[in-house]
Amino acid sequence: MGCYKYNQIKWMNTKNTDNKIPIYKLETKEKVLEYYTSWTKNNQYNLDMVDWNYIAPKNAAKIFGKHAINKSINILDAGCGTGLVGQELSKEGFGNLIGADLSQDMLNLVPNGLYNKLDLIDLNKQLKYTDNYFDAVICVGTFTYGHVKAPTLDEFLRIVKTNGLICFTINEGIYQKYEFDKKIQKLEQNNQWKILELKKSSYIVNKDVDAWFCVAKKNKNNLNFI
Ligand SMILES: C[S@@+](CC[C@H](N)C(=O)[O-])C[C@H]1O[C@@H](n2cnc3c(N)ncnc32)[C@H](O)[C@@H]1O
Image (cartoon, rainbow, N blue to C red; front, side, top):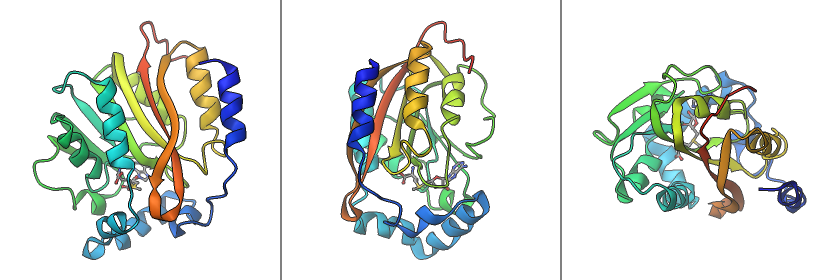
């Protein structure tokens, strides 16, 4: 993808989403964790996602399914939360899933048997998985205000096999603010991955928030030299 397209994308992002949802105001890991602890009481997170028409898990699973032909690949659902993405992947025929999240309260709401394993992790730190371990990583709703930052994409590249897929969403409000635009472009310029798809699409419909949906393929000879 050339610079022209990246520059074009830059000028298309004009909406201010900063005040759309209270969680967008949180800045520390501790505050984010506290928020999810109360949001999961009485299953409220899942109820709100239905109420808000949070369409990202379905959209992401469909986009991912277009590029991932083999249904038995092992996939890390990074920031899996309560398993909404796992459920959509499962509908698309993918069943070899590991889920990982910062919040044990969110993981406690994951339906039994959806993932082979659930890991409690901080995606802003070095991940405990070995190099080239996964066929794919999917990360939906987690690159958002106060959550996970762009350098995590380097870790996704490390733990995914050559030709493996990395599929993720980025809340439109932080795409430039947290420099995801630059990071995505740099990884392509450095020949570390090839962008297969990058488009802005519906994310939380009833809150009028969109996100960038991206699918990238890890290149051969990825040197991971950032
Ligand atoms: C909006 S929810 C999305 C969950 C799920 N992917 C979905 O689409 O429903 C964001 C998730 O990111 C998790 N999260 C926030 N910061 C994180 C971090 N540093 N490391 C791992 N997960 C994190 C939260 O606990 C929460 O489950």
